[in-house]
Length: 224
Image (cartoon, rainbow, N blue to C red; front, side):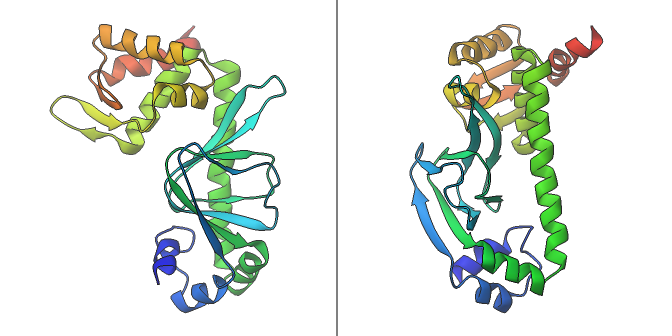
């Protein structure tokens, strides 16, 4: 029943009857990956859908010059296809369920409403991809970092007496990989924000003291 609970907690499968879901999960396999371990290579598991049962993993592509560009970060309850030309690497220990595409197809045929929820999930993934392309093509590094910080705060932030407090969940090198810059640039960016009094840092915990000033850094190109 544990594996059923994992799927039922996902928005994609939440409304599916438990017995039907159990029937289609018989042929699933799962594997635990250590932090920084490669979960998949391009086209490695074309016959599977990945379901993230626990943890987080980064999906990225590698440019011919060796640079990595993050497509999305998958978290618990997310799904992804093995058909893509992407790599997947664990950001922390994670557990991935490999759902055969044939089983997934049968589930969709039996539950047509699932296709609409799947379209929404894919739409969010596509939107995120275009956002990343836009950031890399049109935004300066400081803007990309400011946007990363604000978006993370919006998703995970908690308002406290000190300010908007957020656990980034990433170290400087991981943030650099996510936004497409160097670790030194990330370090200089956060140090600069601290000197300006915009944030306070406590390891991976950031307290945003002035959200407006941070937001202005994102809008500077548009205003110019």
